[in-house]
Length: 348
Image 1: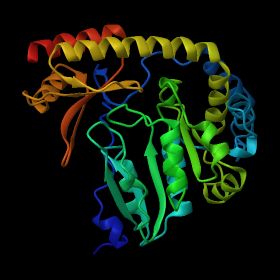
Image 2: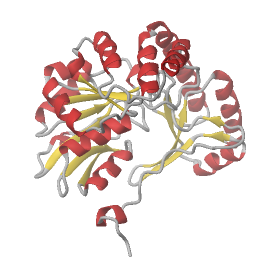
Image 3: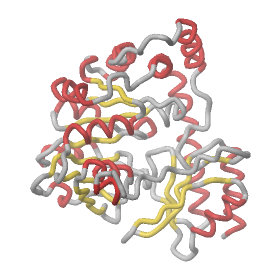
């Protein structure tokens, strides 16, 4: 006997990247930042702990919203915070997509989008990226019941971006909101925050997990026009961000010098990793994120993934139906990348 709804019983569930709980690994599989978070984060957490944790946190994360609004050039009521950007994506799906309706995503992309649709009992329409990682006008086809579209930009696993102008074209043509998932935007040359001001259907989500080295803390946010943000506030859990996360996230975004320095190091290492993998015979598309996508036309890559793991180096193996497989390698420190590249050299 099962007590679950039929759609929950039938779904596979999202499988996250491996997070080993014992032993020492070089982790290049889940796009974490290899550098320590700003020192101000530790101080902010210590100060907040000293105040005590007996009371509930601010349900709106006001301190963060005030500082983020200042940095992004919007008002605080344009910002909705969450327990990581995955929580924000969940709120968005719950707010817009009902049972029997439709959610649209490109593919290959973040597979959690499909999980969100399945939880709602909704259909997930996956529109294939073109071979050059652009999107055709099939993505803006008006389908009955289409309630929401997700666009990861930069995309995973490719690290590629659509231009803001192309994103605006898609948003204006769609009959529903377009969520631009900018989890990796701090490593890119462009972003779509300005589009939120220009088009009410554009909603941008951001994460502090990648660029601010706070994956273990869980904090993300959405930027949307105020009437959209107000609707999302009705749907989110009452206190979805804890007091320590709010304090740490606010301190992190306030350290612009740290972000600039860390971003520069990751972009430099990303170029080095890209060049090295191409030298080893891999096809590597130019990435705008903190990882690179590596495909080999002649050699199977799954055995490489498995041997790297045996050597305690974790990368992400991904296989997409109708597209093929590859290795997504996060940009670690230069020392971590040296170990990974030396092993791959031996395997090819």
